[in-house]
Length: 510
Picture (cartoon, rainbow, N blue to C red):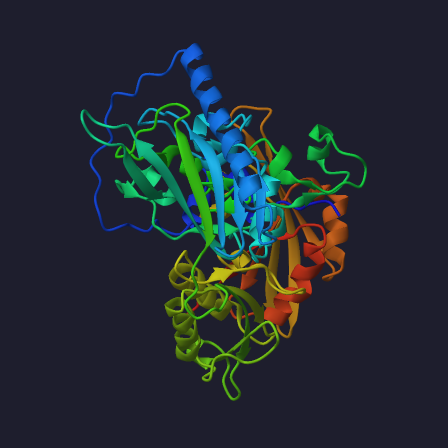
């Protein structure tokens, strides 16, 4: 199956300035302020000094590896690797690393990458094991990998249980003094220039990267035999063990929506901590403590229906039912207040509710939009719910929350075809408007052709005849009081070829 474009991808294409930032949650501000970053970068080493420092690190790792092999030879609950010790009893991974020296304004994208990565200029430290080995180590501790972000699969939140990462090192001894030992959370090493503070201490998500099929484009770079399972993190350009932005191939991701461009402009090294090039560091990774023993990730399905005897014109007239992944009802009161109360209970338990929404056919479109404005605008976020892909036969929630600028044919870079629906008595009539922009002339010109649509199943055929499949999205204009079922009758056939659909509502909504 050919991957389809995601909503953020389409939004990026439509406007010269990206709209994805508008979909991201606000950053969380920590309590303590940090001083402004100094402007004088630390002088770099000569090539000879760098080689000598790296040589010493590797010698220390080799010596430690030999000691660990002897010490843990009889321990089945400990795995010894060169550069990594995995202790299942202590629930801890210990990595031997080498810090990297950066200027205070250097954009940072990774906590940890493997030695030999092309991303060392954007990482806090290098380690000497592959990302796949770290993944195997976390599984050995008893953790299960989650899922990384995947724009093509409409998965915009890193999913998985969390770990806590620390960096440990020794500061050089002052005159007549002793070396000072440091142990710092990974988040404290990153300075957010937007809020003039460090990243929030919310841990990292064990997404686990993903394995590649034989025909995946990245496999051409893999030295692997046919049928061999290759982890994307081992061969993707990022080669990430722990990233600071949402990297699809990483083993550990940040627990928020963080686009690469946003991170690149925002995160720099914390000026409170300065590393020498290839300064030895120890990196520990431990599962996040869960006081009640319950997983952080919690799947929920929200079923939305019109309450009996009501018409569903307001949120208070809806029946909102939350169920777990086994179909058991969670909220005692199937009201708006009951739904919010259930979410708040999950937040207080430090759980991440991944919520899939299923809308009944009788719910009016304007009420659906109001509900999604609440869910997305007020309840979704790093400390809130995470809206996931809807069940089969439903539209993704962002379809109901389009950017109003998309209606402006002059402003958008790539106008989409428009399906206009209107009610005539008990029937729905449709018109397909083919809008194209000719960029071969200056200024670009618009051409608009209108086509009558005979019925829902005629729409995809007409789109194909007009060669519209080469364009990524379809705008649907519908009456605000149209029901969800009436919309789906027209939208689902279109979705077979154009999964990215945006719904604009016509008429009064009060």
